[in-house]
Image (cartoon, rainbow over all chains, first blue to last red; front, side):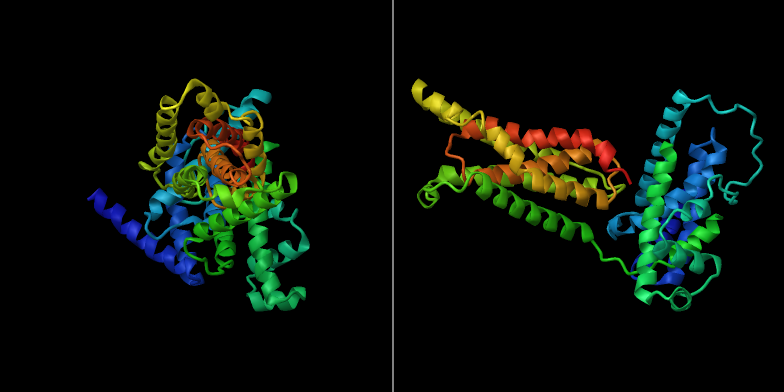
Length: 188
Length: 213
């Protein structure tokens, strides 16, 4: 029974991801949404001692999956690929956290009563919107207009006076730069 | 930012992705590494003047076959290390095969030689500089391959750095072979190998720092 659900979600993820990689934005959106639910329970199970960090890690992993999506091979199970990325980000977080604890006071050991359901999104502690502010205008403006105001590429191009391709490149580079900012955020 | 907003944002960046782009990137990096090494060598050392003559001796070609065979195994491992969740399988076991074969060849060669010949075969006249040049000539490929490795998504950073370094080392070795006056199999199996292991060690040390993503 369990095997069946696993293989069904594998097939569905694979189908959605491959269409997304081919350029289907709507199906890629569905993929990321369903994946975020999957990742949340995957990471929550492995990060039970740091429940407040789960949503940050979900976001960081989603961003990494997106930025590194060219490393997916259709021959490979999507879940193996996704889990390897999630585990890499998890280890990275734990490593930087243990380094920090050596330097600073240990984290408060208050009891976190955990009420959210397994898959429900909570607010992330680190606000990516704040990190976004550090990006240069040609990356930040396309991201802000497309995300906050829900504008299309064409509308964003008109509002910012950038060309459509510059808007697309700006979003693309901005997302890569955002991943770098998150990483240096860990190290501070 | 809420996770749903982030997803919305990510989904807006949908340039189609070229399948198996890593193959092309490794090919480009190796090509750039070879060209860089050739330029460095011609600038630093020149090409041996008798190259047209020695090119007819089989031992000359062993000097390319050895790093070439190592490179084939390392490339296989490096491409698997570049992508998350891809098992290495038996690929790492391919890497020592050409080394062992060359050592066997070296032992046979030394066994059949007189003591004076042995000294020439093993030490040659350039044993001290050979590893240095092999390592120096691997620098362009080293930079290009680390850059490619970083553009992909390795999860075992020290190992990934080591494999990028070893692959660069094979480029350095094959390029230096155009200049190197030695031809003993035991010479190759020791001094070339040491030269190739320098960038390997450097890659293993640098990997965890420079390959993070």
